[in-house]
Every structure is written in C-alpha cells, then in structure tokens.
Amino acid sequence: MRIIICDNYYEMSKKAAILVASQVNMNPRSVLGLATGSTPEGMYSILINMYNNKEVDFSEVTTFNLDEYFPISKSNSQSYDFFMKKHLFSHINVPETNINIPNGEACDAEKECEEYEKKIDAFGGIDLQILGIGQNGHIGFNEPDEFLFSNTHKTDLTESTISANSRFFASADEVPKNALTMGMATILKAKKIVLLASGKSKHDAISKLVSGKITTSCPATMLNMHKDLVVICDKEAYHG
Ligand code: F6R
Image (cartoon, rainbow, N blue to C red; front, side):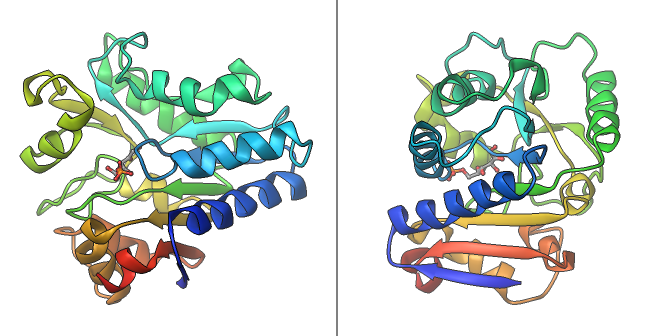
C-alpha cells in the first residue's frame, strides 16, 4: 500500500485527478471504476477542468460505477446515475454507451448483478478503480458483516449508512433500504485501486485500513490483499 498524505481536500482531489488523467493518457481505452459520494466530487471537478483545457480525452474510455441504490429511478436526483451525470459525465466526452452503472430500475436485481459482473470481465477488468470509504469502513455498499458477498450483488444498507446518507434525502425514511454493489472480489480484481479519504470522520476507518490487519467487520481492510493500492487522504483523515 502506498499512502499519500495531503494538506487538504483540494490537494487530495488534485493528486487523484492527475492519477486518473495519467491513466487515460497512457491508455486512452482505459476501463475506469468510479465512485459517488462527497469525497470524489473535487476530483471530478478538476478532471472536468483538465478535459476543458485539452489535457485529457475520455472519448475511448469505458466506466463502471461501484454501486447504485435499489430500487431507484434514474431521474431521482439522489440516484447515483443522476449524480454521475451532474458531477462528471455531462461535462466530458465519454460516450453514453461506454458508461455502466448498476441499474436501480432493473426488474430482476440478481440478473442485473450477474450481467454487470460478466460485463466487467468481458472488458478485461477494471484498470483503475476509484474508491471512497464509509465511516464504518464500508467500500461501495459492502457493509461490515460476518460474511460478505464476493461478486456484484443486491444488499441491505446498514442503519449507520442510512443515517449518513440521509443528509442527501428529505428524511432517513426516504433513503432506499437496498443497493446493488460490486463485491469485494469484484473490486480486488481491479488492476490498480486509488482510495480517497478526507476529514476526521474517516480517521477510524483509515486507521484500521493502514493497520494491515484484515477483517470483514471493516471491509476496507480487505484492500490490504491488493498489490497496487494507493491511499490518498488528507491530514485529518490520517491523523484524526
Ligand atoms: C459511493 C460509495 C460509498 C462512498 C462512501 C463514502 O459510490 O461507494 O462507499 O464511497 O459512502 O461517502 P462520502 O464520500 O460521501 O463520504
């Protein structure tokens, strides 16, 4: 694991954006794994600037998002589909047909998950996976538990995640109770992983991750099994 400690959120976002742009410049047909949430918003905004300055071109890139609420309609402003269009896709030239997000409108969630996993494999896997981290150490919607599913699957949200995400909804009752998410094995198959963390609230989870121990009660610690993991965090997340 390589850990980059930044002074602040902007520096973290800038370093991550440069890594993504370098990946795409080295291989214009890169397969990117993307995350939603507050953490990567700054990175997306810097990537949009880089695209506008012609420093990076996304015309041949393929993307796979980590997760999506279930059920949720794509037009719901809290869906991850909506988030990605708002914060990235509608500002860059990635073709719509190259964008993949688990379908929160699917009739058959199990079939959707199986096909999503197969599609990632058919593209030769993810070259660079961007991750955020939950306060409880969740990755995607892989929540702390005794057992975790390995591949893309439908899952329940924990009370802690419902409460953390309720800030985006009118009330906690409106947060969907399920999600479709890549599993830890799907994520660990990525060739390179970059995990971003900002703020004191992420300190516990980051401490467990960097301890080097592995437990399903903090899914982020499973990333210790990956041979090419870069953690970019700010001082607050690292030192608490
Ligand atoms: C989002 C995702 C989640 C977030 C995590 C942190 O696609 O997979 O695991 O990365 O909940 O969210 P923020 O960045 O809002 O603190």
